Image (cartoon, rainbow, N blue to C red; front, side, top):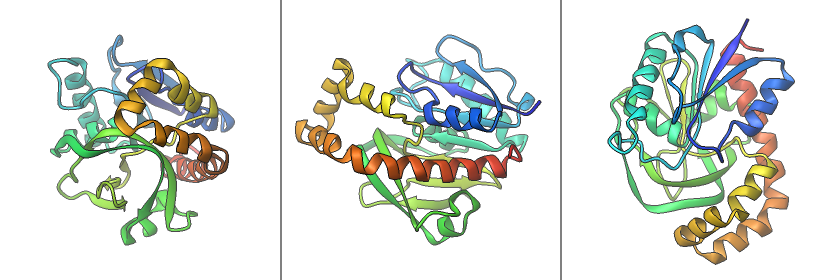
Length: 237
C-alpha cells in the first residue's frame, strides 16, 4: 500500500488541508508526533511530509528529538524519497542538507504572496500557478539555501521562500496546510493571539481578519494545485 509519513511538531499545526486532500485521493498516511514518538524508518514510506512548529530548528538542546528527526530526514534524502518540508519542516530540511537556520530581522505573520523565480515557474511543483503562490506565514526564523539547492520562490521580506534539492526534496518557508478552523485557532486562541500581537501588532491581526474571506479561498485553491503536483511527483496519484 502506498503510504505517506507525516511528522508533526505541535498540536495546533496538524496536516489539516493536506490530510483532507490525501483522504480525497484515498492515499494512506501515518502521523508521528515527534515530541512524544520516535520517527519510524522513513524508507518504509513513499513520501515524507514535515510539518511546522514553534521550535527553533538548531536548538537540539531544548528539543533533543530534532537531532534524531534530522537523521531520518537525511535517510530520506539518501533514499531519494519525495519530501515536502513546511515552515519548520523546511528549516529542518535545510539543516539536514548543511544549510543554516537563524532568526530573521522581521517576523512574517499573515497572508502573503511569494513570487516564483524563473526556476520556480519551470518547476513541476508549481505548474498551474500564475507566477506566484498565495500563502500564509508565521515564522521568525529563516533558512539558507543548501549547496546545490534550486531557489524557487522569494518575496521582499525574506529572500529564501522555497527550494528544491535533487529531484523532489522541497522546502517551503510558508504554511499551506491551514483549514479555516486551524486559522481561527491561530487567530483567536488566547495564547496564540497574544503571541501574534507581540510579533506583529494588533493592527496586523485586524488586517488578517479582514483579508481572510477574500484571500483564504485563493490560498486553498493554490494549495490544492501545489500539493496535488507533489502527489503526482511522488507517483501517489
